[in-house]
Amino acid sequence: MSDAQQAYDRMVRPLEDRMIRSIWRIVRHPDDAEDAMQEALLTIWKRWDRLTKHPRPEALMLRICINAAYDVSRRRTRQRRAVELSGAAPDPPDSSGSPPQRMIGAERHAEILRAIHRLSRKQAVATLMRVVQGDSYEEIADVLGCTEATVRKHVARGRRRLRVALAHLAPTSTERGSP
Image 1 (tube, rainbow, N blue to C red):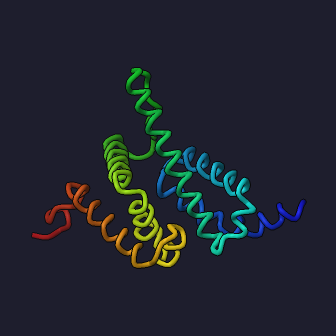
Image 2: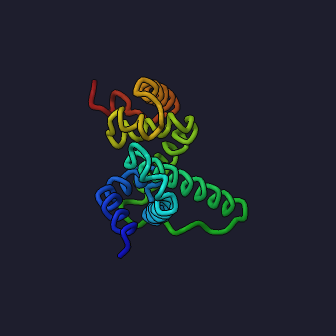
Image 3: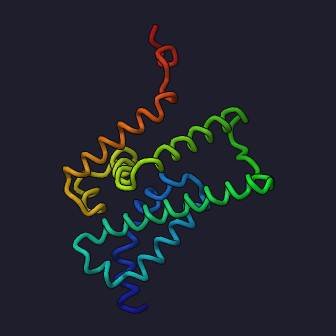
């Protein structure tokens, strides 16, 4: 094994779980997550020299993963639209849970992803990393290449826009158990 391969393994292996979790939270589909992870790893390998010189290589690797996940998600959306326009049959549905539960879950997930994709890129990345993954503002700032104050603003604006866009999904007072 070459020195470059060993250095790659030392740097990437400890982050693999976090990388795949970041990807999964965006794509939510096993095949798409695998595709995005492969694309991210390929990009990391191709840009290895630049990555090792970066002040926070972990942050850059996570950013590459997030970008790959968005790329795969957009590609899947374009493919789905092409199938809808052509009239071809969609993939068979998932067989876990009851049909109404699967349908509602899939519709909500798709709607949430559409809402996130309508955010600006930086708002979407900051909101996903902070709210879903629980990353610190410092880590997000490293990924986005901005200050922590800017990250806080991106997260606040992203949350506000998502709250408005997804208000109809919030449980009503009767669903929460209030009288």
